[in-house]
Amino acid sequence: MSVGEEVRSEQGRPQQSLGTAAARNLATTTKSVPQMQEISSRWLLRMLPWVDIQGGTYRVNRRLTYAVGDGRITFVKTGDRVEVIPAELGELPALRGYEDDEVLSELAQRCRQREIGAGQVIASFGNQAEEVYLLAHGRVEKVGTGPYGDDQVLGVLADGAHFGEQALLDPDAIWEYTVRADTACTVLVLSRHDFQQVAERADSLREHLRRLRSIPGQRTNKYGEKEVELAAGHSGEPDIPHTFVDYEARPREYELSIAQTVLRIHTRVADLYNQPMNQTEQQLRLTVEALKERQEHELVNNPEFGLLHNCEYDQRIQPHDGVPSPDDMDELLSRRRGTKLFLAHPRAIAAFGRELNKRGLVPETIDIGGNRIPTWRGVPIFPCNKIPVTEARTSSIIAMRTGEEDQGVIGLRAKGIPDEIEPSLSVRFMGINEQAIIKYLVTAYFSAAVLVPDALGVLENIEVGRWR
Image (tube, rainbow, N blue to C red; front, side):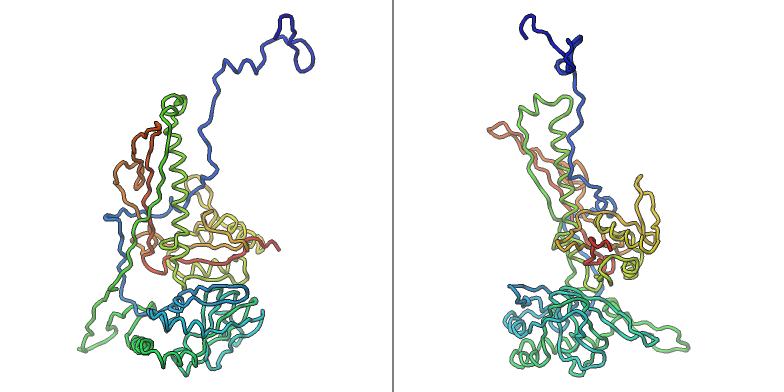
C-alpha cells in the first residue's frame, strides 16, 4: 500500500482496526488430524472371536461324512446361449468327486437350454423324474401338499441351483414336489437317457457310479455323518453294539491370508513437518485403517475363506417375495442353533426396516459399546458395507454362530509376530533409499474358518430398492 492510500472496510468506510486476513499471519491455526471417509464401523472385525494360531495354518477336523454333492453350479453366457462349465457338473450328487474332464465335457454338451415362462410348471408331483435341471437364471418354487391338502411352498431356488438329480441314479424316481417358475427362467436340462449313453461308453464313469451306490449302505445321521451305534431302552442282557467315531481323512486347512503395503515418507517431511502432529504417525494410522478395511472386505468376499463363498449350499435360502421379510429372517434363524449375529449392508437393513414398518412391527434395540443396534428375535443386526449390492440392487444377509466352543465361525490370526503394533498386524522399518525416502512394510495376517456347516447361513438375492 502506498503512502497516503487509505484502507477501507467492505462497507466503504475507512478501516479502523487490524483485519482478520492480516492477523492470521501472526496466529497459530488449530488443526484436525487427517480425516478419512473410508473408515467404517467394521463390526465384523470387532464381533468375530479371534483365535491365535501357530504355523500359519488352522485345521478343522470333523466327523467322517458320507453326504455326496450339494453345491452351486456356475455357467458361461455368450449372447443368448448359456453353457455349464464341465467341471461344475461335479456339484451334482451323482458326479461329486468325478474328475474325468473328457467325460464331463461330453455331459455338458448334452445339456439342452430351455426357456421357462413365469408361472409355468416345470415338473409335477408324482410324475416320473427323467431329467435333471440346472437353473442358470431365475427363481423357482418347490411346491408340495400341506397336511390339510393345500399347496405349501417348500423352498425357493435361484441362480446356480439344481433339482431332479435323483433321476440320474434311480430309474424309478418320481417327483416328490412340484416345481413352478416364479420368474422367467433359463435352465439347462440333462436327461437320464443321455447320461446313461455316456456312462455306457465311459469305464471311469461306470466305476464311479458303482462306488457311489455303495455309500447309501452306510448308516448315517441326518447330517450325513457316519452314525455312532448305540443301544437305548433295552432290558435283560442283549448284546451291546460296538462302535467308534470316524474322522475325515483329509480335513480342510485354512492358511492365513495376507494384506500388505509399503508406506513411503520423505525424510524432509518426517524431520521438518512434525509439529503439532507427527507425520509418520498420521501416515501409519491412515494406512492401518485402510488395511483393516481391506481385511474386513476379504473376510466377507474372498473366494477361498470369505463368508459369502464358504456358506454351504443347504444353508443358503432365497426370499419368498424378493424383499427381506420377517418370515425370511425367521427361516434364516431356524437353520442353526444359537445364532449370535446378523451382518447386512445398511441398505439391506433399511429394506428390512421397511418390511417391518408395513407390518407395524418395531424391532428391539440393544446397546453395544454405546451404539444402539437393531435386533430381530434378540439377535443383533450389524451393518457391514463390505457385503456387495449388485447392479440389480440385490444383496445378502449373513447369519452366524460364532466361537470355538459353540462350533461356530472364528477369525484366525498370528499374535506375536515381529514388529507387531496390534495382534497379527506389524510395521517393519525397511530402510532409507538413495532418494532419502523412508520405507515401512505394513502387514496384516488373517483368515476365517467355519467349524461346522450350519454355523453360517446366508439369505441371498434380497431386493434392497423396492419401495412399494
